[in-house]
Image (cartoon, rainbow, N blue to C red; front, side, top):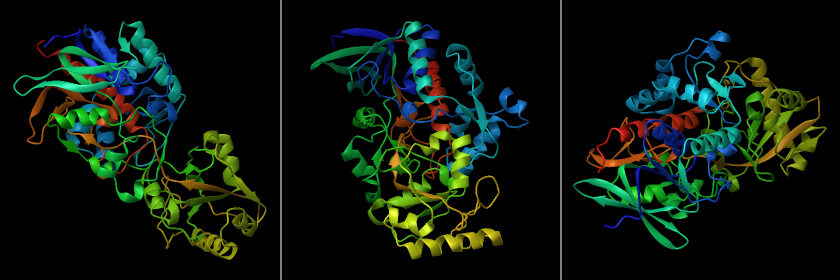
Length: 453
């Protein structure tokens, strides 16, 4: 075959995993190319739409706050609460020190704080600004000499059944480009949210009408290329998984329900414990009439959010001085909503939610809504998705496996395009980000050891 270009390692996707992996590959001395579908500056990474939370375990930042933690404890949380594969989870949590060092030294970023998170046994969510992280990753990659081919998506892997992946065919301006990858191709193409065919194939019917907040470059091309040469999948049914409640009117998401707000459907009835982990609330909401549900909260909760979590108030708020008035604003039955809230407050006073089993993540029941003290607020929601939780089957070095469990030589998958970390469909906050950063580097390190073809 005639090759147009030759590199040691080719990454497909200039998102969180791809950029982090490329930085590590260049440090290892490899010649690196990143193929990217988007134009420079275009929205292409899930990192840009999230808070940028990253989970690290046993850090100096935790110790300064008196938090005792370890990679082993983080691994246990992932296995127990998310259904993650133990070996996969351990492989990346063991490398967290290295990832934090890269964030601090290469990107020049320091966490602004540490908070608890859904499903974590301790506070290990180190907070950053998502857009700043992806911007610094790109700047550092270019500074180190990584070449990024913009508007040049991968199209097909060049595969030999005996030798494995030899390179990749990319497309630019309607022209095919044959690129040789002497040590390997690393897929970091994100999920498949903008591929309706794949969503229908792998996602439950009730999740087909989600608000899609991921980049439009998440077309599933990496998954499709891998499938065509025999790659296996893992937890693919959890790929299309709900994110946080998202405002129908502004497409802003929120977590204000964790401050004590209640969640009701169009019948003004609660249908799930509001403190449930990421994904479960959205999944249950998608099953409600028209996939619509409402978060109801009072002024005390709003004040707390405004002070401590201002990004939780980017949605369109409905407001009224009385519960009945708020119900009318939301087009709900006033009597039904008042009865639901009265019953909730009675359960709060009794200390037990006998209706939905709410317990809140910090061990308290929740905050009662003061039904006789307005104003009251409401948010009209639909389920959304920002990142995918299932994909290509990999081993602990992020090498792609076929259905017989054998490695496809010189092919790797990292970030959202890979599977195995969320076997229950559950998710704990901040894992996807730090897993993408870390596993991108793990794949680069393993590819570096390959004998060049």
